[in-house]
Length: 243
Image 1: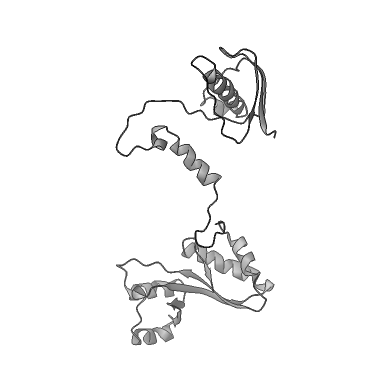
Image 2: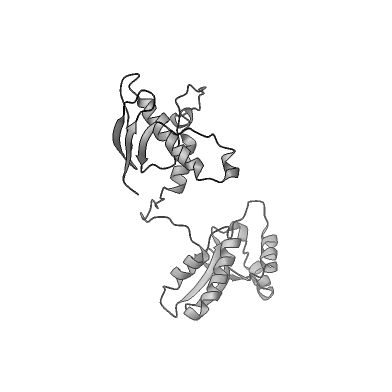
């Protein structure tokens, strides 16, 4: 699409056959004395045509829920996108009001940052990207062939849960190994007495990682790795750690 919005022959209200080019993806300020046509250009021409074209692209069913706008008095407008207009108001103010809430632009900016914005790690500076099972498995398989790895997920405990109940639940789900502060603990029936004998308590460790699988990096084990990562994402509430 063109980098310019090209308006030709705008005669809406007090505009006098105006021809103007406005840059796209830029902040443009329209200034002038009262009655010079600022609102006629911004709202009654640009916004009206952008909204009208957007509504025309929708189905007949969807159109019935939206306000239909008349075509502005203009010869042509090129390069225009669907538009949003934020009108000037005098809202009720409170001690918690901000510029964003007072102007009602907050919700739009929140959507803009969430959908278009990019998040970067404050520690390393790398862009934060969401991972899927496929992308995570692909990254793990870039490790040298033959590398031994453990696929784990963090165990999140509340302060009220007891050690015995946690171990019982993990066993019932088929998990028999856990890394407690870096120490591998066997939760199997054979290792139960040993765990209790050393005074091990899951509720007191700083970091507990449940071991889902232990395997060697190999392209032949791609499906097995993907299944293990999928389990980690589900049980770890979106988190998986490969060691």
